[in-house]
Length: 237
Image 1 (cartoon, rainbow, N blue to C red):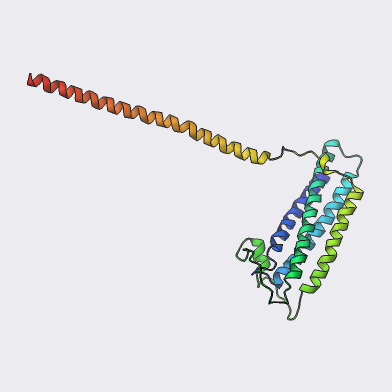
Image 2 (image 1 turned 60 degrees about the horizontal axis):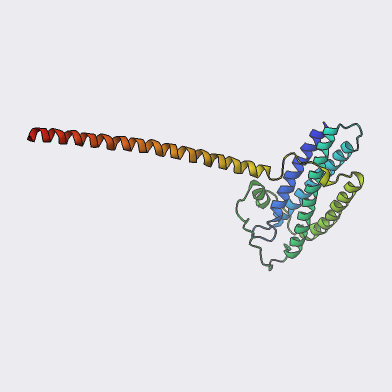
């Protein structure tokens, strides 16, 4: 049960983290707005809630001495994935802080970044950019206060990562991967090569069949011409 719960938490965390990264890319662009900043705030806080829950569950499971060898190996793999996901989240939060400071909402004279994400890129971006999704009171400015909160939350995530290393020691180089590096790429290449091989094998066969048909037609035509010539010579003689 512990393993399944941890997997579910990590799956949710990875999706929310990916959503947050997608939204961060729009800061300073043509679609940047107060709506976007609000969505960024909600998304990163949801990610932090999931991170705290995943850390607590994984820590408890890994410190349990009764955990079997196979299950522990899987939990250690999940721990490494969680650590990597948390590192990516912290990196994106720092990027959001830098971009937010560089492109504050209350300074419209700042030039915009041409992110290329101003269109309908996904359901997430559409939700974040929709002016009808959320209503704000006049004069409400999330920008300055949120940047200060973001800075504090970055420090909290950093402290969380430090506490993780102190409570549970799982060196990444000791965790075995379930498949060889690039196995997915190799399988794709192999499949492509097999398809090409199949096509290559079929093409000569088809070519040989066509050649045989043409040879038969030519032979029949020559035979008919020879018979006609023979009949003509017999009549003339």
